[in-house]
Amino acid sequence: MDAFYILPDGALKWVDYVATWIGFSTVVGLLAAFIVFRKHALNSVITILLGYVGTIIGWSIARIYFPIGDRLPETIGWKQELLSPATFLIGLLGTMFLLFIYKLIAKQLSKNTSAS
Image 1 (cartoon, rainbow, N blue to C red):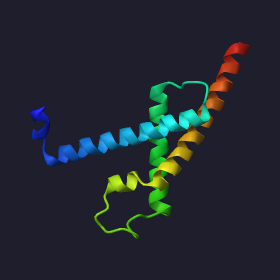
Image 2 (cartoon, rainbow, N blue to C red; image 1 turned 45 degrees about the horizontal axis):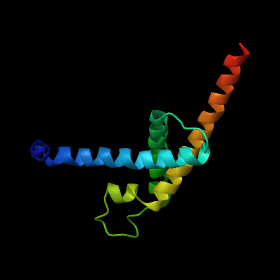
Image 3 (cartoon, helix red, strand yellow; image 1 turned 180 degrees about the vertical axis):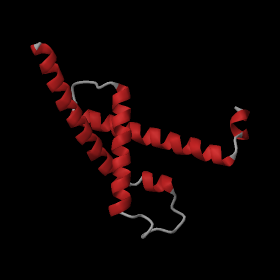
Image 4 (cartoon, helix red, strand yellow; image 1 turned 60 degrees about the vertical axis):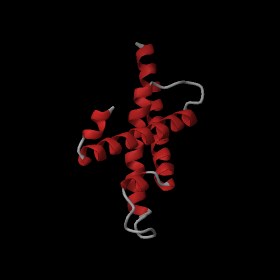
């Protein structure tokens, strides 16, 4: 446990960065999967990956159209921007869209394999 505190500050920032992205993306992906697939459970790796992509889309759109720095002090960091309600909602919508596309592709592939 003490070895974790020996890491340089730059490494601790990266650990914080990665853990926050993974946690936020997992929450977005699981919530979107629950909304889209109410009865089926999706593979958790696919859910997390699509949640990650949806979060990147949401964060990018939120940074462009809803700049937080204009309304809040300059001390706002990437974590506050990532964990904003706009990022969450746009990321959720983006992930739901990706899951819907995934659902359509999976349905089409299952039709093609069952017809063969």
